[in-house]
Length: 593
Image: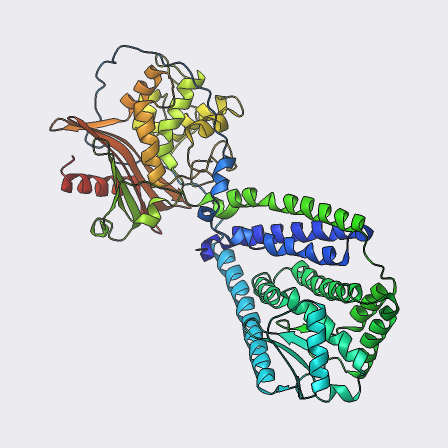
């Protein structure tokens, strides 16, 4: 579900997709005006109807989006080394998480205001739609079935001519001033009261053929879909323009279908019937849920011009139209995977596993919105608290430093023997940061500048290649080289954290074993009753408020290993220390640590 906090990005995406698609269709129609049949001009608009819902479809419902994330299968040969010497464990204060605040523009007010404006527009148009439905319902009640046997026979002849066998109610009503056709389950063709007194039998026949063409094309269902999309996209004037043009092209297509069923000498009569009717009937207020014979003077003029120059469509024209529709469809459909990848910032991870136990551990999360994920290696089973939050991607913050360290080692920026970095001289509010660092001290004190320096020394593109190789969350580096993992573009879910830790622990990526072991040593925390706890905390602090807390890691206990990830969120009190406290409480209750 789209929340108001996500609305700005979704709004902009909808605006971009709708405007781009409509622009492409308008351009195609202009460039290929003489190379398309009337029906193809109308059918092109169906590509708009297909494209507009795409940004609103959740990523989970678009499985092909996952295939867009390219897998880098190149791997280094494993280097077998002797077991490393025992690394001293942390002191008892390892749970004290260290972080600094990042400054971000607060778009909450803009998001909320924009969401309120949009939902207000939707509500207003929904009311108008409901009124239109009531108007149609009222017309139904005041419609009298035709009793003129001659006209009923003519109506059946027109149905037979168009090969229509369905049941259609034809009648007249004092509430309409133009012929209209409507109804999904039960179709009505309604004409103005006493229409037979001022229309000739030929005029009436042409009107019947036109309205029945709408029925054959299932235009009523299309009307409802168009209205729904117009309500949702009310903010984009191009959508209003597109649907107005689509309705005109539909009338022209129906005119062409009727003309194709007539002799050439009847073309002028058909055009005169429309002119005659438009002259006799004052323009009625139209209902978008119904199809109307008449329209604005400009629309009537356009239709008459098309009728005046109508020629039977050749096979070549139909083939060219089919080719254009095919290629246009492929082009528009090609947006879908890219839209799905962009949608909602890749906000959720699609997770499927047969061995999952969902357990409510909410009593440990008092005051926090969060999730806990545990994987038992021996049992090959997951335990998850809060199913939805377990797959929700959020910023990794300092938990990413595990993989930043591994990238630094794999790229040669640092080595196992020499991982030192000179302090840059900038004064930080955390005393331990204001000194030279090596990998061990940088992990222990969570020294952000150390890992930013590693990223800056890695060749351009290597970070992206690395993230693609290990499939790290959404793999989005657009937040900038210094901050992409600090409450910015890079995001990962608790389930993905656990899955990634499993692969890191077993070195399934084929990195150098000594590099894996070096990072493992750097995140060892404490030992208790024969069980070794390793992990990394992380805190997201934005504009001075702690909004995001992480603790990820694993417990090596006897013959089993348990991997875990805890994430907590609230407005100003979420941090890695609290996430660690919650984790330890759960692990203790489970008898794991």
